[in-house]
Length: 78
Image: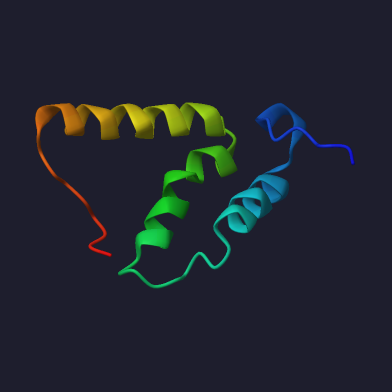
């Protein structure tokens, strides 16, 4: 099975939207809108302005930074 690139240069906007939707399953799921928030996080990828890997790195860096600060901040209480 051939794996297609998910890079912006190799995909159309519709393909990127489908990639994000399939990655999360039901984007409008419960958890007080957590899934919708995650989907919004990838809007720049869908729009073709930022690669998924860059979005993920920024998210992880922010999460690690908060952890180092000793603050517990969670948007989802589940």
